[in-house]
Amino acid sequence: MAQQLVLQVNVDVVFAVNFLADVAWLLTAGVLAGVRPRLWRVALGAVAGSAAAVWIWFPSGRWLTSVPGLVLGT
Image (cartoon, helix red, strand yellow):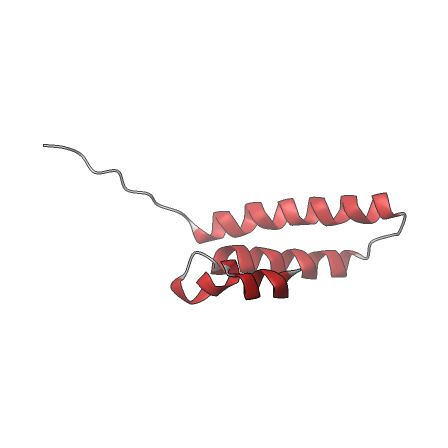
């Protein structure tokens, strides 16, 4: 009898890892641009990016990977 592989993705872990990566990227971009990044703006941008990264996995969020969704995201 063959075993089936079950993929389990925890939404909170995906959100947390993506949030930390977004914070690191946004802080680095601010420093390289020569501006002092405001932490509340960095956190808000990281929350938005992480929420979008989680939302893509749900059927209602698939439009984010289409051309209009990518244009709106940039």
